[in-house]
Image (cartoon, rainbow, N blue to C red):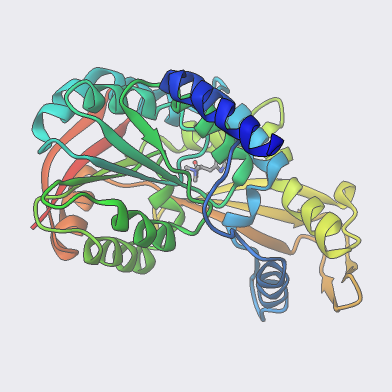
Amino acid sequence: MRASAASRTESKVVSKMSKAELLQGRSFQPIGDPLSHIEFAEDVRRGLLKRGQKELYSKYLYDEIGSALFDAITVLPEYGLTRADARLLRRHSVGLAKRLDHPSLVVELGSGSGSKTRWILSAIAARQPVTYCPVDVSSSALENCWRELSKLDSVEVVPLAQSYLDGLRQAVELRSAGKSMLVLFLGSTLGNFNPERAEEFLSDVRQLMLPGDAFYLSTDLQKEIPRLIAAYDDSIGVTAAFNLNLIARINRELGANFDLSKFAHEARYDNKAHRIEMHLRSLVRQSISIGDDFTIKLRRDETIWTESSYKFRCEDIASLARRTGFDCEIQWVDEEWPFAQSLLRAV
Ligand code: AVJ
């Protein structure tokens, strides 16, 4: 009796609350089950036991500490990418919203903390209510994103803690009949994929879209090598900490015994492949146990490759778009830090 009376009172109160108040009170509940411990262990095992160049997948850089360090990277003076991305979005959001066919669903792949997305979401929501699905494997980043953007008027945030394609597959279920969708892939995250994977990924995304839907893609552009090296090897060592955190994470989660003082962060540019590479260089000859699962040996100066960040030319994006079922409708370029945003239309 008492319980039902209480819940009746509660629902009455709730019905009077504004949307903002409702969202304030609602707890963060992402849909999905992000990366599993088993998958992490298997990927680490495969990458470290590889003959030749050892490697670790860059998606594992983003645990709670790694995501916080990445947020610090985005405000470093040397790291111009995020500011360029934000400048372009601020400058062109309204123009972009006008070109779109009143999308009712916006899906952001790799939203991170979502701070850049505010401009484009408000420009779209000013024209009609919108459902926003941030997709990210980092639930701490998703929670920040949810806190930041669920306050916007006419925006419903549905966070998806999943891989990009699983998240997109889930999100398209929320599309209202006859309405279009906008997929955002900002921050030059596409640059983490090698060219074959990037092409395959865009084709997979295209498969989940309908003709007329829009894909808005940010990519870092080729520029002077010293500027690129500085962006990935900053003077106060935040990027070094970001990189080293990956082996610290393996210590924490898989019971390994990496001694971080025996590794150095390294950023290199491969001028043929047009990519920055991050490596962890072993300063001595050493062996490391990954829990009681397996052991690896590292020679002095042998490296573990932890990330690639490809740098593009505008025409690379346009031709990649054509090969994957899109038409590159317009590109905007930041002059201060060469960086492009491309509006790709599903054909
Ligand atoms: C988030 C993948 C775009 O490659 O520039 C920053 C990650 N790595 N500093 C990038 C990163 C080192 C970043 N992305």
